[in-house]
Image 1 (cartoon, rainbow, N blue to C red):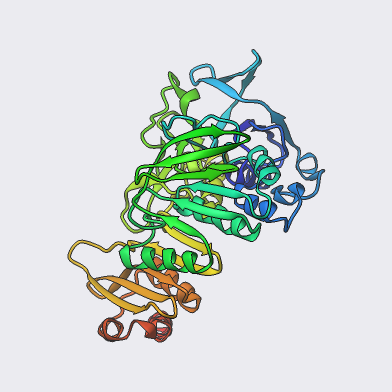
Image 2 (cartoon, rainbow, N blue to C red):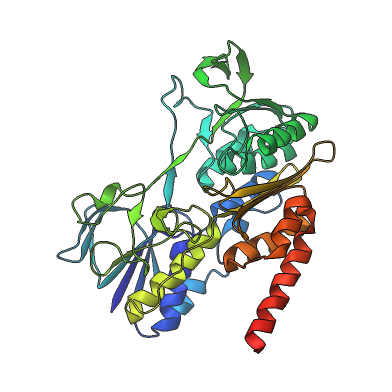
Length: 420
């Protein structure tokens, strides 16, 4: 049995390891598109800060790790998939056959159609190569423009601030991290950043980037022209699926998979940021681009590739945990609320603390927090289990901060029920 994995990020690497665990004899080939050992994009900010060397981003630190597992790592890009012949065409002309294929090709950072976006000094921060270029230019005191204040943008923001650059963040939405915050929470994060000396321009677009001597200038939709030694684009990503054209694999926002991570084509599976997997809260399928989900996808896909479709997923919880210059924000499940549901909110703007609970009947279905990390485990646990809170729901509507008590009461009730 020859297992081929396209992509050497967290999903691909974990899948290779689980395939070896479940099939000690099978042949495993891991295709890495970049000319570097498999690494984690989530570790790039630590490299930018200088906390770790480039090697610190590698997913497995032992250089012999893959060889010892009998996993062949091959640096190659796939140009097309012939699912009927079970063969891959690689850039450069080579081909590779497979018995079972896992697509874990992840996503690619995209740049908006802005004049000057391809100038030297304008980079994404999506690859190790990007990170090396940013480190060269992001000297203390340099003028840096960060386009985008979404999840990825705010992770990069943290690293840039630590490098003591003169940082300006430009975000087209009316608030920061709009996909995990409501207006109150997003505005509080903006205020926190501004108090740290970071300029944040929300409801603003970059209209053009131009060369200005040895540097750059950035024109905005609000009429400003800002000097820049470096511009970093963090305005979104798209799933890497172009090589699947003509393969028969169904693609929507990502690769459509079933509850076993199998695609619309037999013996082809998908995992990670490229997979449109099942959401625990809604039962619907969409791309959930977070590393914990990628790892769980990989584990399930590997099991299905070896044993068949025998272990289905209940879905993965949508969750985000973000550190923005020392302020921790989180969101879980239906943080934006459920139709016909109720909401409890605690706001302390002076202390940068916020807690929002979303209920459907007496079940906690979503939650978000800012500066209150003590509730993270409780929020996640109650949402994942779908526990009925009973009288505790009304108590939390009055005092959201009593979440740990509600969680303990729920756990005790469950243990009592099991004991019976």
